[in-house]
Image 1 (spheres, rainbow, N blue to C red):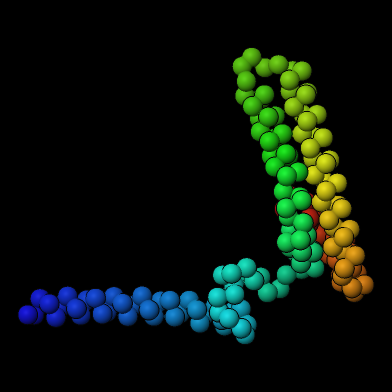
Image 2: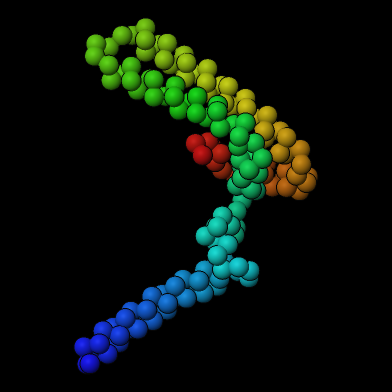
Length: 147
C-alpha cells in the first residue's frame, strides 16, 4: 500500500511541477507581451515593437506570398545549380557562367516581383508610415537585404 501511495505522490508532484512550469511560461509571456491572449506571442505576434519595415515586409508576405514564392524558389534552384557546377569534376567554365547567368536572371525576376508587391503594399499605408519607413531605410542601410 505504501508503494502505491508513494507512486501517486510522485505522479502528483510531477504533474504539479509541469503545471507550474506551463503556468509560468504563460504568465511570463503575457507579462512580457502586454495585454491580450498569452498565446499570441507563440502564434505569430512575436515582436511587439516591430519596425515599420518589418510590418511592411510582413504585409507583403501575407498578401503576396503565393505570387512571390515561385520566384524565390527559382532563385533557390538557380543557386543550387551554381553550387552543383562548382562541385562538379571536372570544372566546366561555360557551365559555371551559364549557371551564374541563370542565377542573375532569376534574382532580377524575384526582385521585380517583390518590388511590384512593395508598391502595392506601400500604396496602402499612411504618409506618416511611409516617412517612418523611409527614415528607417536611411538609418539602417541594407536592413531589408537578405531577409
